[in-house]
Length: 137
Image (cartoon, rainbow, N blue to C red; front, side):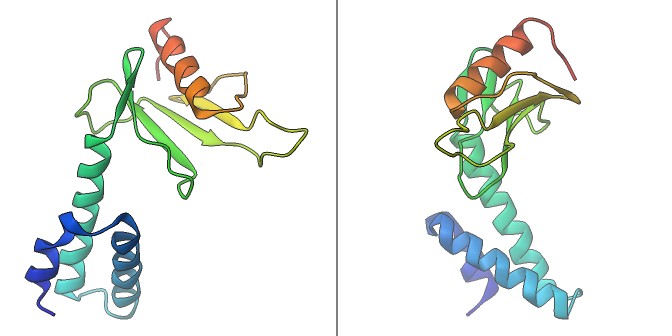
């Protein structure tokens, strides 16, 4: 299939298809780092994924948070809806169990909040409140 045709159809592809394409691009580039078509497709996929994340950011407090994706270990917050520089991150620091429920952590710059959170919504709120209270990277 023509690479331009694949790139033109990326906006209609599902997230799973984009991830599969990205894996295939990585395989091709591992064998042939100079493959121009694979490089172009990889850049186009990254741009599509970035655009989707921008469109799906959610404002909590004064920060704009990326959507939570169970397949991604961390997700970021930004000062503005279209900013490219993250100011905070939520990451899963452990696995949920019957006893261990508070598994999400928040870091602003290199400062990690001491509290752990059982769900993403609470972690987002705490991160935004910490930002609003002057914690900065």
